[in-house]
Image 1: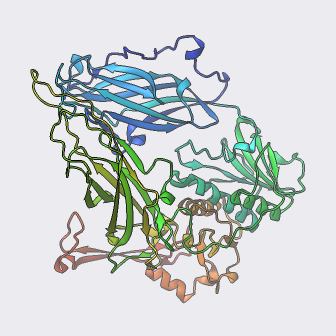
Image 2 (image 1 turned 180 degrees about the vertical axis):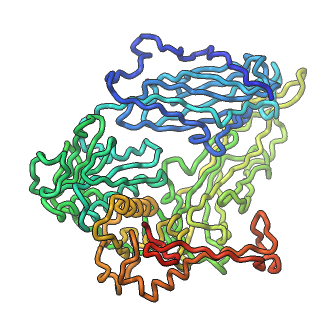
Image 3 (image 1 turned 90 degrees about the horizontal axis):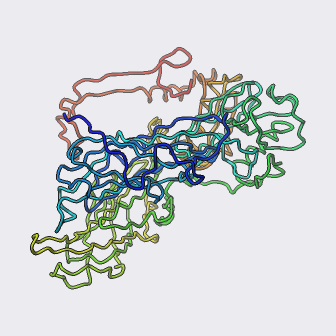
Length: 637
């Protein structure tokens, strides 16, 4: 293996390692005592999978994206690149340009010593250009001969390794106690890390305080979404990070003993008593009823947050929820437009010589019953620029990285056989296609991908008779009025199913507000048991996108014997349920049998051989129940 060759430092428009002392080049001024943190963002973490990038002559751009919290400022940034240039490139004429938010940060010329070798390079990034949302773009300028080059030549390439990384130094800002930017800093959408938000009580919380904390935790979980969330619980002890505190006039943590009493539900933002850079969101009330009102005010968004504190005078109840109406789930009662499935503007359009794929996410209830169905109807409307030659381009549609179907992109133009002419944008053609998606390929989370594959004519010829032209971009659009219809199907799933709970919070998430859920808690829950409850409802909120405003919590097993509800038991099985035959049935149903077939294959077969599927051996497993008996009843301990 050839040793990695060090790259020459950036020569063109590069930021110096030690910034000049002019005001334009100075890093943001922060207090000398401000806490700081070092962050290493590898391409394996933040670049599109698999993390490495293959830059080519016809597709010369690659990039990464990252955010910066609003209560932090970047004081230093360095891009550490690991890349390998093609051995056929012309030195110096071939370059790698580095942009941050479309500002040129540096240029890395390819030298003769680097050709075909792994190269390491550092590009200093001016922190003044780092904002709340940032794009680092890498542009490959490649040449393999002086005249008559073909941009599609296989010798034009530069590979970026997945071990490349962006090293950042962040300093914390001493922000004011102002709720106008709520939920920042307790949740910052610019921060892609999992949300960790401690919850503080004065002592063991009663049922009303548990419900108030569950409502708030599920709301933050709904905001965290794909990031993940965790809610550590502390009794009369403050963490060293942003946290939420629940307190009444009679039951307060020690640090609030001298805080004035309140006469209404109050939400207040204050400094940590030992660290002004850490903020506390204190939910105050005269009693538990006030805490519930304040929690519902946060969750239902009926409060106009401003200043350091707000009073929640009234909370208007929302309309009753319906089954399967979670905001994060695709609706199953009517056709859904692609415009409703968009998560950001311009998601359904793409441009370029080779347009990037268009992706649409479908988050479905796990109990959608699709067996013995011909598929799911999708009415697709799309527009595209005219292909340069007839019958040469197509639209490929894939579901979960599996190819489904392809359609030709027709041209209204006569075939132009003279490749000397520049192809001209002829406007957007209209296409309308009905697609049937194989139902058995759908799961709880699905990715639809639309690849517009263009055949682009490239220059050619010889050195004496060179043919060259400037390629133009192609533009493709999936119409917002395209629809997909799940309304013709039933809901059915065999329960219990822990995978459905882990992936979608089901069956509790069937009602997004958890109105059909009864959480059973111990009489005096420990910090770990309270954390389990809050993590569970937070995870369900992350799946549904809606807070658990109608969750019921009890610690009396007498109230659950004949309750028609989904039970979420935290701790051991209540004494009155241990002898219930229905509980025994659940215990038996969740025992696991692992059957090993006679002939195992690496991949599942569409039409398996029955003889090969016959079990050669069977293994039985179970877990120890909290009461000491054997069984598989899923409870949180």
